[in-house]
Amino acid sequence: MNCYKSKFEACLKKVQKPARYIGNEFNSVHKDDFSNLVSFAFCFPDVYEVGMSHLGMKILYQMMNEREDTVCERVFAPWVDMEDELRKNGIPLLSLESHLPVADFDIVGFTLQYEMSYSNVLNMLDLAGIPLKSADRGEGTAFVCAGGPCAYNGEPLADIVDFFILGEGEEVNNEILDAYKVWKAQKGKRVEFLEQISRIQGVYVPAFYDVEYNQDSTIKSITPNREGVPAKIKKRIIKELDNTYILDKMIVPFMDIVHDRMTLEIFRGCIRGCRFCQAGYLYRPVREHSTQKLIDAAQKLIDSTGYEEMSLSSLSTSDFTCLHELIDELLKITVDKRINLSLPSLRVDNFSMELMEKVQTVKKSGLTFAPEAGTQRLRDVINKNVLEEDLLRTSRIAFEGGYNRIKLYFMIGLPTETEEDVKGIAELAQKVIDVFYSIPKEIRRGRSVTVTVSTSSFVPKPFTPFQWEPQNRIETLIEKQKLLKDNIKTKSISYNWHQSHVSFLEAVFAKGDRRLSDVLIAAQQKGCRFDGWDEHFEYEKWLEAFKDCGVDPEFYAYRKIDHAEILPWDHIDIGVKKEYLMKEHDRAYEEVTTPSCREKCMGCGAASFGGGVCFEQNQA
Image (cartoon, rainbow, N blue to C red; front, side, top):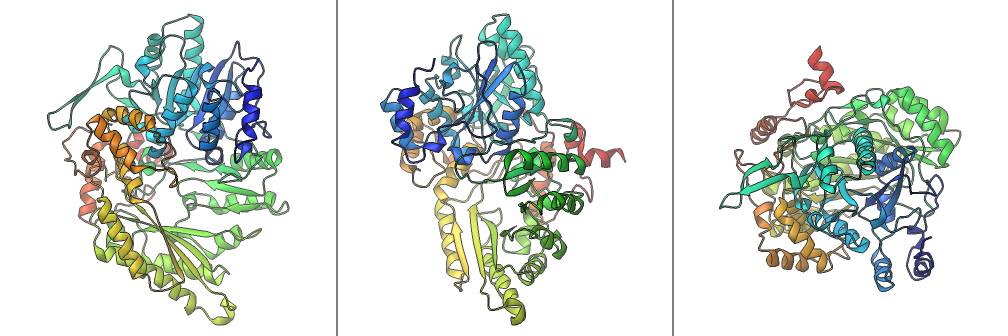
């Protein structure tokens, strides 16, 4: 019996969006008897409408619940109004499906999509009544695990998380659940379970590794502290996507969410190798679903959800080998039902009139492109491999096809960036405006044009060629934002930018080590949470937390790192060799570009995992 039910229902009357907490959505899974099941609480450290837009959670939720021996329930970070009600009424953090205490689950798993969600991880553990440090969790306490892109350098959470899952979860999650069943039946000790799963490829138990530091605070060594633990933890990937779980059913929320639509994942990985992009290296090699598998899954998604929009998901949708064939087949099952196809992550160098006409068959969606840098020199530095004429050609196609709004994404603070590069962003946006007005008036039909320029601040990320780079100081980033704003001369261009203080902390935790665990705990105790939300970000509290723990955040964000230095994540193997990243770092300063994986295999190392486009090229 749920002793918190009546209290919890009373709280719903006092919060802004009760639909975040009620559950029971269409296609959600409910299992009545937990007693003989392995229970997994899948936690997303942000609000419901953000977490419910995440594809990975949807895949693993459905997959684990298809196991007869497992129940997986969702948990989201309660918004501040609900948190206040929970704490005031003595209610712990509850799961969404059964409204049972999260602490009663066997495994509590977090997906780490963004470094600025770390404070929410700790706040959710605190709300659940689970000790924040793994060393303080005794026998019978839930295991805390974490996966997602930030888990590849999970060192800032090393004292908090019991084990990390590195890579794609479809296979490794099942292996962990199988191991848990055996361990539970044997009534083993807590450490014995961690020892058993540490032998599974893709599982990293930070407590099983010792880190020594030099006097200058750099890392001296990272070594296993017991036998049977791998010196390097190798990520997991799904070699053949068609042979694994494919999402054909999705939960349909009662409220609007950030991406309120069906999502069809068409491939994983990226052929491009942009030097700032962590995902492009983490998810190598490229692996595609077959067109027929995708059509079958799309039909099932349509039948099981009733959504009026379908998004094709990947890191670079227009690089899918059979994109036109896939869209043609999808249109056959979507047009009559008035279902719109959305293609995010399009590149300006392979956008065509034919593609544009197909995607606007039902509804004209917005167009967003990411040149990333304002000058060709800087685009060569970051290996973006798109030309100014590509963007202008694509803009003309869009404008002639009836579009009059385009969004352009850029980064400021990139390595080697100059004032001319920053001004180049404004100049490039103006050239797009000029393209619109160069089109004959009878085609424009009296329409006006809007170009939205958005800039994020460059954050050096692990496992990229720029992992050794410092971030621009906050005052420098603010000066560059002002410089760009001052160089925009027309009201047809709107400019949005991200907070530089948030980007600074993102860099600290992206490149940080396990000495930051205490900082995270101190910040949470000071009330830090929802740091990715401007209205709740409290920079001064973070500075206090660093000071209280004797940690200098600038050491992680503002220091240029020598290639010979041991990095906090050097014991993690993503397949891409460190030597390759060093070469790409050098090529950036030479302003030399690297071809895509389909043009030429450059021997990054990802082929060692098997499967994917580079494996095929190496075998040719």
